Image 1 (cartoon, rainbow, N blue to C red):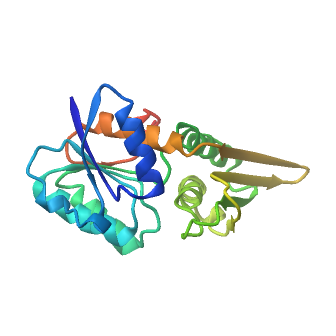
Image 2 (image 1 turned 90 degrees about the vertical axis):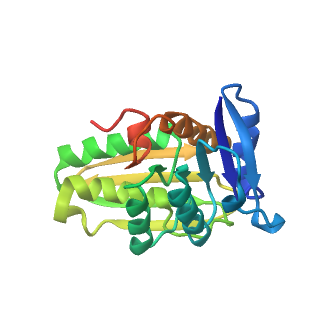
Length: 230
């Protein structure tokens, strides 16, 4: 049985993750920790295979330090990290295995692969823009998913894609919609993903946790989990 701990247990995503864990017979929720209940990951005395964290950057980094010290594996779905904060995650991954992904849905991660193919084929010939739409409660803009889409395109296209634009909207209760537009003379290619149910992110996080259990120290993402790296 895989023992999972969920931190920030009162959060919107964490509640969905807890619900999904309780429905899966292969895993066990050994701890659900909430700061508002004065619960501390450091005080845990029993074994934990993986800690799942969908909180906020400052809180995630506190949990990261504890996991690094105690040897707990981590799945991190938190977004909004600065470059310096991302460096702390990379440093911790030299000690413990970490899956760090701004979006854990299968569809979004397939879209990253499609973006990579499109950027490689078009080779800087198109103007590129990204549209990022989320619910009004989301604090970070652009979203981690939009930034990841831009990163994928830039890594393939190089300097030609550095001027790509990201437009963010925070409206209503939209779960998440992301589109990359490649605009050429006479035609436009759009690669779009629309999430309609937040539970898909919870299922992705659990899939990542199961995958991570037998992995050595290192920084992984959902491309690794889904076998899409090459």
